[in-house]
Length: 191
View 1 (cartoon, rainbow, N blue to C red):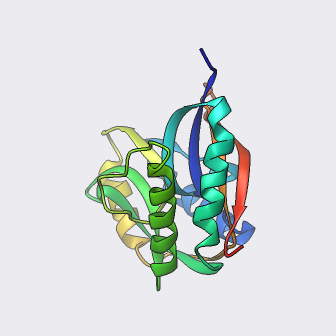
View 2: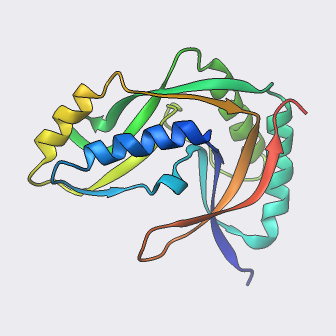
């Protein structure tokens, strides 16, 4: 039986966007909620979560990602606007969204989905919504209402723009201190 590895496809953030998002996390952390916040070095924009895949399949996945990335020219995306799924009144996943023209990002996601579907990965049933996960609520409790208010107040938060010229296949190793991500491959856009 072949070894498996937990994987996802993502976009790395420009350092300034990462710093801004980390500063927002620090501000949101001030309310006493049971939230597992994302470590600043782990902040990224996920295009597709693949789950456990056979280690010997990663080269085929990287090839598919290279073909998908070649179909979209490099672009910029503005990371802005705090929110939550399902909503800020009942936050479970806390995020920063995107602002402005996100058509290139949606197009990139579509190409990634199409290429990976040919390898047997199931297409996501939900409509793609670009977001940068900041944290996940472990369980409701004291402070959730205050957290919702802070999220409403941060609806216009601007983290800055990220240049998107590559996509990455990452491994995700879960530990008691949080996940450890490592790049397994990268693909350049427009090449």
